[in-house]
Amino acid sequence: MGVLDKFSLKGRIALVSGGAGPLFGSSISEALAEAGATLITASRSLERNGEFAEGLRRQGYEAHALQLDITSTESIAQLRAQVLERFGRLDVLVNSAVVARGGGFEEQTPEHWEHSARGNMTGLFAMCKAFVPGMAAQGRGSILNISSIYGVVANDPSLYLGTEMRQPPDYTFVKAGMINFTRYLANYYGKHGVRANCLCPGGYYNDQPATFLENYTRRCPIGRMLDNEDLKGAVVFLASDASAYITGAALMVDGGWTSL
Picture 1 (cartoon, rainbow, N blue to C red):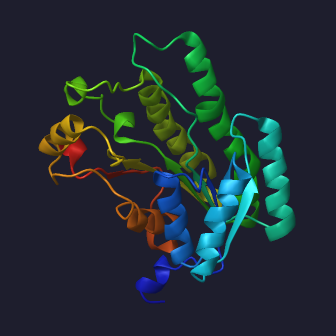
Picture 2 (cartoon, helix red, strand yellow; picture 1 turned 120 degrees about the horizontal axis):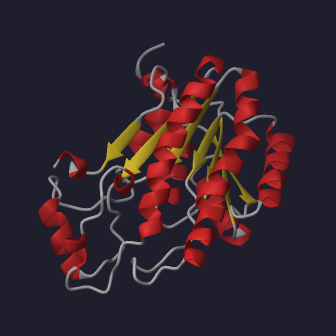
């Protein structure tokens, strides 16, 4: 097998929670489909998922849409049953879904954290609990958890000067814990043929205020924010056999942000 063949996901079944999302989710889904995987996108809006999957099918890729409420263990159990009934197994699990958050330290309440924990922590655990043992039983699988630069370094409050933007404190808490949970999975399931890694993206361009963009790009070594194409190569690498000896890693896709 040549080195480029190792990046192929042909014949693999891949599930992306939040896979039709306008930020990371859609980029991740597109990457897996382009690499040859049978793609399943799952999030709360079945209609949006269906439209996204249909768009990929029109491009010649194999894509399917299922519904998922990441805050509901019943919904996760139903998703598992549907995946196994329709596809027989799962080879790649990408945990990309994020529960909506908002407000800075002064604005957030314990109730905000409880809501965040239900989806971003309990939901992550429940997704892995639902699908990873099956991967171990078949002797092969790749888990990819989408963390953040703010799971590795503290946020920089100066980025938000002159704007109404705030970095929610629950986000850094969740994303840091995700990295160590990924290491746990890597160690627990490694000898069963299952790998677990994190992607840690930098700030994603999403029509932020000009002042924020100026602050961010000045600090970032590459001099711009992340866009749709920047995650794709890293996603395929960690999902595929090209990274067969990599597990427990947190791969920075951040334009050099965490190198400072």
